[in-house]
Length: 385
Image (cartoon, rainbow, N blue to C red; front, side, top):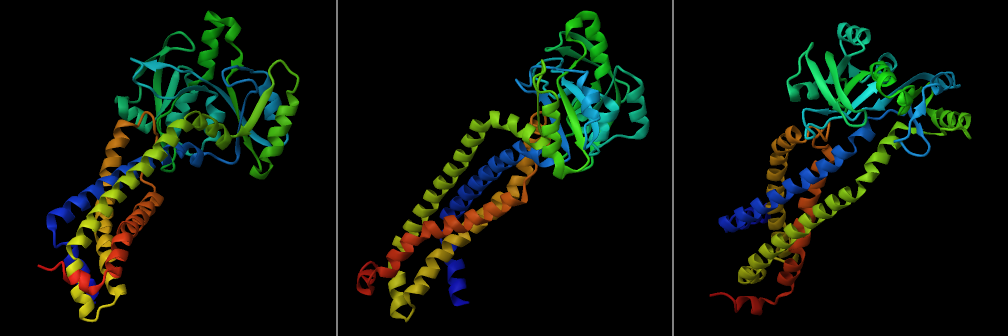
């Protein structure tokens, strides 16, 4: 108990120095927490994916279409419960800075495959009845202030022209990881228009979505679908939804690696700061430690005093950084909603933050503590006065 009191008194003896060190550590923890949250948000789509959903695309590349005629064959494949299809539309709302994902889909089957998208029945019925209708995620609708009945015009990039849609429904995610930023409209509207302006591009889809009856048979179903269209003009490549999303994430792997490196650099920098603080503190108190040894305190007591002081400082800084992480993440969530459907601080990030406090506190104080333990009483007493 005496040692604990001495640790707390020593930690706050130099209030300005301790305060600045705590603040620096808190900022480092805040930066680390936000960087880890960005990485977690990057993989949210994988975590939200379902093991019972497969994605079928062109074997050459996703940019090449597949014939609509494949639909019935896929739908009747053994092990398939539901099949749907769609196209990435790539439309722009007002200007290119207003980016969000927009898809032309087969409405009824698509919504059946994604039960995590909760849409009121009356809004769903309106959506299914009107080919120019669309549904938007709650976050997307809030972002642009859309309300039911509003007319929204997208400028096509992949499919040129101005496309008018009417908002028929706003869906919400059943879970926190569900993407509430999608813009979904009827594939029939896209195909009917293409028949008039670009007949050669009609009757084609960008991907098929497949629901399997038994997730354990996903690999077998995928293999059967690809075998069915082998040696055709448009061969297929079928994979789980998680693998499909990981394919997109891998394109930004370099960015993720940079974020990881930066987060490590942040820890190294703060380790240096705390180590310097503890080295200065230890040098100033060598005489005090020598006096404690003359009073019967052992080297282990001295070691505990120095390491304990460092742990108190890093623990306070870590807690302060964690407290600041949540409002900071909420602010980032507002600004990055178009790129990250969810931006929530993962519980594992908090565990990392606390672990860093222990690691940095222990590592930064280890060498100064060893030096203080090894110094002879006579040498230490010479520094008094």
